[in-house]
Length: 426
Image (cartoon, rainbow, N blue to C red; front, side, top):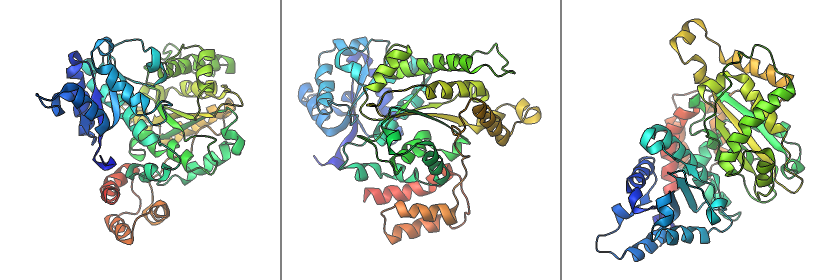
């Protein structure tokens, strides 16, 4: 079967988890993906084993809905082991476990990163949808199957849009990452990006991942993997934080929160030595990102603590460097009517306060330059240099942007994506 005719995902599940499987299938299809699900795609009189084998071949990736029922079902082991056998080093993301029940992953499953939806499909479908799509998107758009196929796999419409208007961040990384050895000496590089949500549609795919892939410094082995840090944290709300804590106190508090986030993502103990051991053994760099909640955005000591604790991690000379990106929405600053009327704090003030705080704790380059809307005359024309499209497509893009001088990246995506998608499909 030709690659372009393959479905995106085969959803493997225990029969008792059919309701959750159907929800995952509908959510993915509403987001533009294609799926194979037994209750939808298998014929009543069809041999189940034959249908399952055909589905595993016809799908690019297998999603395993992990629960106690899953490991006790008759055919699920055959379904997920096909995907695992085709990707034994977990470089292609062919097997995507999704936890829907609090079950301990053992054996081969311990080596595969999973999406955590435990309890959310029943209680908070909005959060479940966010986690599902963030996790799936990071795998689909953040991994590349081989160096030989990197160009064709990476330069999707989503990827090309991610290269728009990021010159200032490129310069920031050039200043921050020290030479070619900086990528192989086991360093921890941490950054914070701040701005309105409309300036980074789909979050990280439009910032750090693309910047690093386009970076002049070559990766020692493989392009980075992108992994969200999504665990819920309890901030220490009893402190008004009027006084700056000592550096040791801030590192201690930040390390506790950081270890909580990393341990849940890596599936290990929330102790610093255990986390370091896991990251030291990784073959490729990891990009961890945290999209902060409104409370976390307002707590700049929390932000400084995470970055400070991360900067103190050393993975060893034989390990790749790993990256942490903290994403702060400017929209959160003026969330309530009270804030808008009486306590308005501009984005410039927020940035300056955080920059001063990071300078105080010797993290002068952790805050990235401000996000700004791409200019049509300069940024879009420069962006054309990254596009392998004909003059007709370029003319269509210029015509679509004829009435704009500068336009937020989110709005720009809505205009350009259909044009790029049409070109990509052809």
